[in-house]
Image (cartoon, rainbow, N blue to C red; front, side):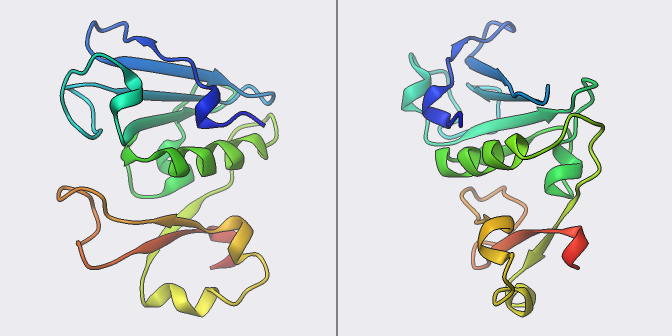
Length: 153
């Protein structure tokens, strides 16, 4: 399975920062960007994509429609400040999808509410940890949360 380390970053077509695009076997695509105008860390123009510790990610389905908000609930067409482990988890989830319009949705469930799901058999393999990494992240600095597949809510 493709992982973050396999992504090939090129200069972004907009002329600032870097972008890697990967197409999965199911025709879904992930776009990972970094640079001064993207939600990444550090949020500045650097000389290499390897220097960044977090990135902005967009996912599109086999029809070319953005599904980042469907997959990761509550965001727009992209989600920022994703570290390499976050992106590996996203790529693993995308790889499991079938080649049809996106129907699998997640909901962000904050701590302590998420505790009721933590002992479920599916939790370790299907829930995705979301931790605040930047002050302008949607979670407060003292909380963490998990993206839970809606079918289990």
